[in-house]
Length: 352
Image (tube, rainbow, N blue to C red; front, top):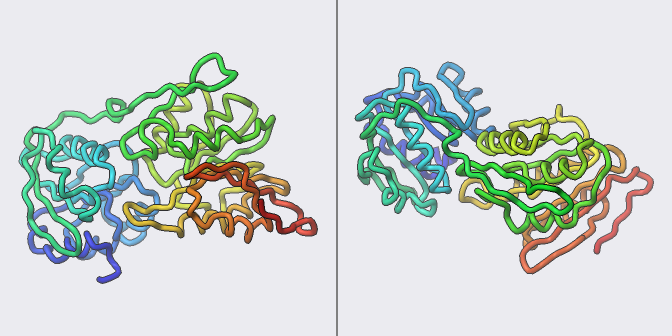
């Protein structure tokens, strides 16, 4: 089981502690655990994890989304804590509705991910955390529900921000949830990209790794004729995007996917601030796979626009896919890149 994540390895070393009660697992990356632990239900907000669990454990109760799951027959929960502390607190609040008073909540996480200090922020609705085990550069904690909650509403956890948009009578209204990229507003890289995107008059746009939908919503307010598709791996991000669209009287298609699927279709423009982390780990494969695939998802003369940290090797990958890569803008941290899908006979190599 060395291929499992370090927190999952620690969980298996403590397997005997977890065999007393049927478990709801939350945000678990390793679907093999379904055969090794008394798992009866699963809550994921990562589309890739969700697909893996549904394939490997089809007989348990599955839930993909931002809302609280059904417990089914679960009497305790086992949570792989996310790197965002606010999201961990959100999960604890949801579990108070799912589980009964006194129910055990196990929390496991990488030492670098905040698990050593998250217990200091626990509300009094759950018990003080107890350290159960240390190992594999990870920590296993135990708490329990002090106060059962009769309900859990995602609406209570939205944070709203106004973003000034030139040539618009009102600001762009953003809705975000804990765990969504750049919560609750906009990051510096995406803000730079918005400064350099053209104003397109028509066409189909894919906002890849959309977060709370700021890029696509900004473009759609400028040009209502654009057809925007929003894609993200996170159910929380897509729920935030849907609320952003609602607040700005916009429409769009939201897709949960861990990358670009073959059935996605083609677009005139793809815009993105692609991620390069999976949890805590730097993961270049996300961006590499996106850049290897995006060419096939553009119409002829379609355009890719993205922003990224300057140290990332994206220009080389864009050039490999498109035959050229234009550096449109840069500062001491970010760069904006552009490439066009040219007919094969006109593909050439150029770099700026």
